[in-house]
Amino acid sequence: MHSKLKKYLIIIFSLVSCLCFASVTNAEERMQGMWISTVYNLDYPASPTTDSAQLKAEADEILDNCKEMGINNVFLQVRPASDALYKSSIYPWSAYLTGQQGTAPADGFDPLQYWIEGAHSRGMKLHAWVNPYRATKVSSGDALSSLAATNPAALHPEYIIKYTDGNYYYNPALPEVRQLVIDGIMEIVNNYDVDGIHMDDYFYPGTDFNDEASFQQLKGSFTDKGDWRRNNVNLLVAGIKSAIDACGKDVEFGISPAGIWANSSNNPLGSNTSGNEAYYSNYADTRKWALEGTVDYIAPQIYWEIGHSVADYATLVNWWSETLKDAPAKLYIGLADYKSNGVTDSASPWYTGNEIVKQVNMNKSISKVSGEIHFRYKMIMNTPGLTDKIKQLYASTDVSTQTTNQEPSVEITTQTTTQANNSNEIKVVVNGNYITFDQKPVIENDHTLVPMRAIFEALGADVQWNNDTRSVIAESTDGTRITLIIDSDNMLINNTDIVKLDVPAKIIGSRTMVPLRAVSEALNCTVEWDAVSKTVTITE
Image 1 (cartoon, rainbow, N blue to C red):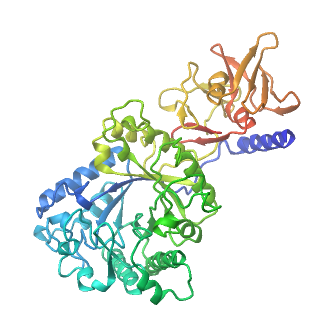
Image 2 (cartoon, rainbow, N blue to C red; image 1 turned 180 degrees about the vertical axis):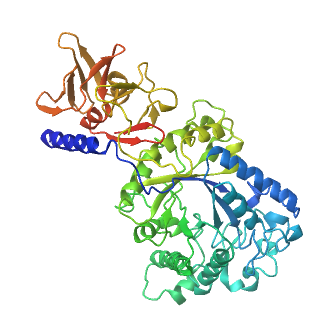
Image 3 (cartoon, rainbow, N blue to C red; image 1 turned 120 degrees about the horizontal axis):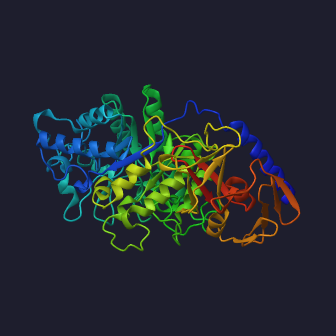
């Protein structure tokens, strides 16, 4: 085992020395997104109005604040429930916009067009967010009475089914419904300069959806209703992708499903979690879409903290990134910023958005993860300190700056040590937690050196110093023992295997400094480097 580890580390060191000064070309923009909800007037507008000046002013304020935070992609909910925040010949104007479904804003104002122009003028992209199957969204009263006479759900009552929550949903089994959704999306794509079409996690509302009649009529060769329902949704997703691709416009299509595809206890391909499963509860085979490329990206809503007992954030991010490592679809992560709103307990991981900072930094450390989308705007604005934290996370990442997993590309001469400080200070995250050092990390000969005791005690390893031999010894919880001698380029593993180091351990400022990647990987940890934020992330 250790001979293989030795060869592995030597290969890594050789590759790093070749890549240190390589430049990154043709990198894609990192997703730094924001969801803007219009249902129930959660984010926009603050209250229904036909006043175009008020609608414009609110849009400008939101876009300005997003730009200030470093957001580069805005996801505006333009069809919350069989309605529209744009000029449509298919869906009526939304009641969340003007107060009455079917009533247009004053002065011929078109909110979607205004948002697109506003986002583009600020260097941001605009994605039109639609809810495909939701026909009504009321909290009380008769849901059907909320529909305008021109609403497709009113014109075609055979398209909809009443669910146990009192609302109506389009029946995913009907080919006419699938075509209605596709036509509605293509109306947006053909008439507006949107950068993307986005759907979230609203597919089948639940397992008790009353579609038995449709199943008996349309099941074909399917004998299992679950498989049949999943196929109905698969047909819609594939149909949307095909229609967008055929139009010839550069429009990205993606979906943000529930964070858990399936639990491993129910499906061996699933994650080591025990929460709600999109595959079985909503009949959304999100894994299939990403692997087959019927979406351009998938953005699972991983709305739990790192270390959560039911659905650990780190477990899920790693499951998605490993599952989709060879998939054509990009992977973004949906973040639960809303959980920080109103939290006053400083012991909570969500206090002032601390958990969001950890999660974004973890995302940056995983090569498959191409960014995240924050839910949602007003919750972030109402959480003290969170806007500043997001701004700091994205401060060094503009729309053309990208991350890389190479070692630091720092132009320094041989045997010269560069102290990391101020904006260039190297940060170290161990299992999601920032490590504070009394002697800051340094870069020497293109390798990061860190104080050994601080880093390995954070990993649970016992660290000892032998003054007679001028050596430092670390022993991990699994019994792996690493020995480094000051100024020696040999690292000894379990007193038997010797690994050659490009940079020897040394003493700086009374602290033993060791090459971070080499010793961390010797303890079977994953080490990632983010050149943009100058952050090293170590994960056991």
